[in-house]
Amino acid sequence: MSAREENTNLFVFDERRTEKETNIMAKVGIVMGSDSDMPVMAKAADILEKLGIDYEMTIISAHREPDVFFEYAKSAESKGFKVIIAGAGMAAHLPGMCAAIFPMPVIGIPMHTTSLGGRDSLYSIVQMPSGIPVATVAINGGANAGLLAAKILATSDEALLERLKAYSKDMKEQVQAKDARLQEVGYKNY
Image (tube, rainbow, N blue to C red):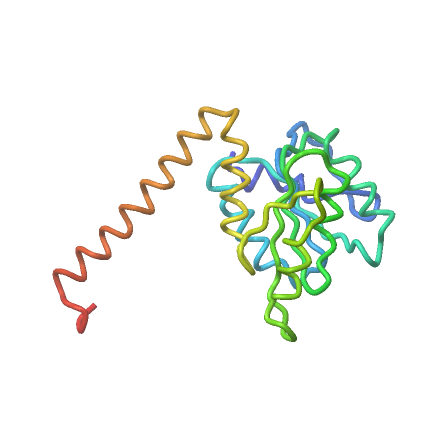
């Protein structure tokens, strides 16, 4: 069974959704403030799936449903999360509030916004008070958030570390193949 098939039961959180029974414990929580964040957050999920890491994905607005958000962050540790990837735009309080409640690493993804190009969300996520760190990736940096979560988990998972090494080797080989093609055909025919 692929990670995607296993994870179909993990896209649930609370009574607002129909929960399926599962014996899989997600290692990573992926939470976003709006469905408009889904294309970026999906890149994190894609990386986790590629590396065989279980996750739970949900949409919770820290501003519109603070009680639901608080319960999510409070229960994350007991659900087995080792890392939370939280994406938000504009005021972007979701990652910081996750970090304030959840005792393990939180990775913040600032979302691109039309008004300030994502700088508003970047500053909201990266400028945390002392004692409440949020690891922050680039604006719309979903793939790097997934990789960072994997690297955090790999500190205590030798098999995952080997998969990460293979992933890096594959990326290197892709670049080398592109350069070999460039050298063979020249830039005008590339």
